[in-house]
Length: 226
Length: 116
Image (cartoon, rainbow over all chains, first blue to last red; front, side, top):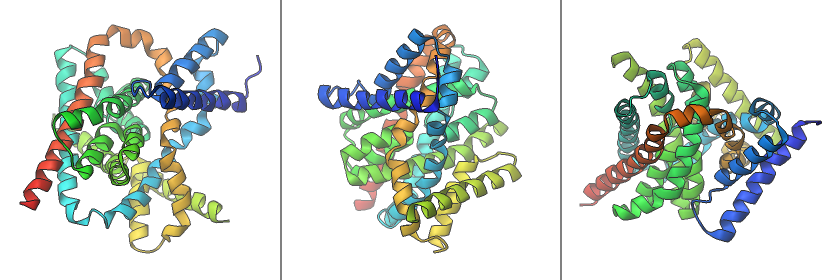
C-alpha cells in the first residue's frame, strides 16, 4: 500500500470533520469530535495494518502546529489583558490553585491505586496543553506517550462535563467559568468555552497560557522539594 | 505578504523560546518561553498586533484538531492502560473535574469578595 502524507492527513482531517458533524447532528456532548476521530482513525489503521508510528510520521506536520499555537497564545494574552486588568491577581491565584490541585490530586490518586512513580509522573502535567506537557513529562521522568493520551482524554472530559460541574456548584461568572475550562482542559476545553461565550473563550485561552507557565515553573520545583 | 510576516514572527519567537530553553537546560519548555517573549514584544510595541493577529487567531481557533495525530497514540497504549485502568479512569475523570471545580470556585469567591 502506498502511504503519503496527503493520504494520511486527509484521513485525520476527514475523521475530524465527520466527528464535528456527528456532534452537531446528535447534540450529545460525549460524542466529542476528537473521540469520534480517534475511533475512526484507529479502526482504519487496525484494518489496514498501518502502525501508529507510520501514521504519526505522515501526520507530523499537523502535530507540529501545536507548538506554534502555544506561541500564538501570547497574542490572546496580550489582547485580553486590558479586559481583565482589574482581575489579574485573582486570575493568577485561581490558576495557581488549579495547578496545585491538579498535581496533588494526581499524586494522591496515583499512590492510592499503587501506580508506578514513572506513571504518576506521566500524569502530573495532564491539564497542560500537549506540547508543554510533553516537555514537562520528558524533563521529569514520565512516559511521554502516556502523558499525551492522558492530556487528550482529560481535555475531552473537561470539555464534556466541565460546564455541567460548574452549573452544579453554581459558578455563574463568565470569567470564572472560562478560566476553569482552560485551566483544567487546555485547548480542547477552550474550544468548548468559545461556544459558551466570547469572554469565556478569551479567558480560557488565557488560562491555557497561564496554566502552562505556572505548571512549567511549579512542577520542577515540586520535584526538587518532594 | 501579511500571512508570511505573521508566520515568520510566530516561528521566530518559537525559535527564540527554544534557544532560551536550551540555555536553561529545558527547565521551562521553549514554546512557553516563546509565548512569553511574544507577549513582551507586543507589550513593548516591538511587534505590531495587526502583523501577527490573523495567523495567531488561525492557530488558536484550530487547536482542537492539532491534537488528533498524537491522540492516536492510544492504540499503542491499550495494554499498558488496561493494566492500570481503574487508576487511569479516576485520574482522567475525577482529578480533571476537581480542577474545573477548584478554579471556578476560587475565582467566583474572589470576584464576589471584590464586589462586596
